[in-house]
Amino acid sequence: MSKLDALSAIRAGDLGPNSEAISPDVLDDLRSLGRLSGFVQAVPTADGAVALEWQYGRVEYTAKIEPGHRLFMCTDDTVTDELEETETDFDVSLLTRFVESGRWASS
Image 1 (tube, rainbow, N blue to C red):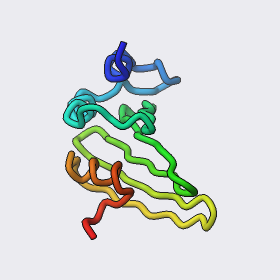
Image 2 (spheres, rainbow, N blue to C red):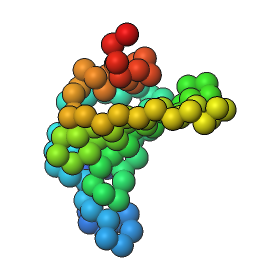
Image 3 (cartoon, rainbow, N blue to C red):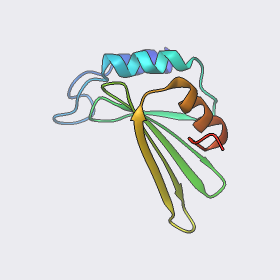
């Protein structure tokens, strides 16, 4: 079973009381990504979203694909505790850049 199949199989209540099934638009957005790098973990959340998580050096990265075709991205330096975050409409090229470079701005 693929990770996408496993995420698709999650139903309301599977992740705890009042948890939601993974939203169909979240699954569509995930499909548009194609294959993710092996270092990226896809973690279902109780609000019907999927968080993509990985760490590089001392920085933890999160990209949460949310219902309504929304995207939340965050970097957390585990040494300095410096936190940066942004939220925007889902954009596959933006998310790909974030996964590949750790940046959401093209600079």
